[in-house]
Length: 233
Image 1 (tube, rainbow, N blue to C red):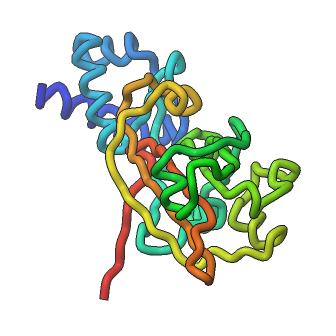
Image 2 (spheres, rainbow, N blue to C red; image 1 turned 135 degrees about the horizontal axis):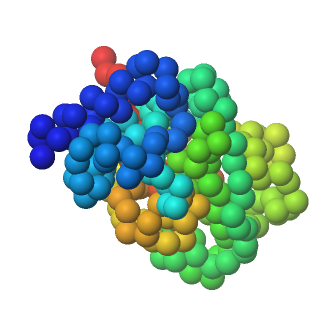
């Protein structure tokens, strides 16, 4: 497999370096690539799966393989504003709201807010895009009593800015937990990948200046679309 894998990687890299393919452009069909490289489609797919893990290509259900753009870089030790960070890194960020409802939340969420199980929350589900490529599904929970009228606002923008402009709430600090997780269909579908595929799960708790929990976020990232960078002194 090693020599075949090296051949596959070299071939894809040449397609990119000679200008035939750019970021987010589709690779030739698997059958065509397999014939060019004189390998079986099983061997080719194994090689492409490895390249996806390295962040060189990515696959979408029923659409094929694409050249991966640069990874989105975040520092988990700092506050994160998806839209502004994306623009700073040369991406065009967009967001689509998948769902919004009022409910009682599960124990880990209402416990984080130091509330009881009858407390009501807004649950907001969104998919985040970089250059029109879906890279992350986000579930956010906010206290319904504190953020009355939230559903009337444009939630396809920055929630951080909405909270600041409409509720005079400023996010001062964040606490996050990072784990690997396999995607349920509810999250895998919007990302264009099969259920059970691996993801990077970031649970992010965001606080105001009074150290009150403002929102409880769970992010499911395509693992090859993101990288962590932490600077220490």
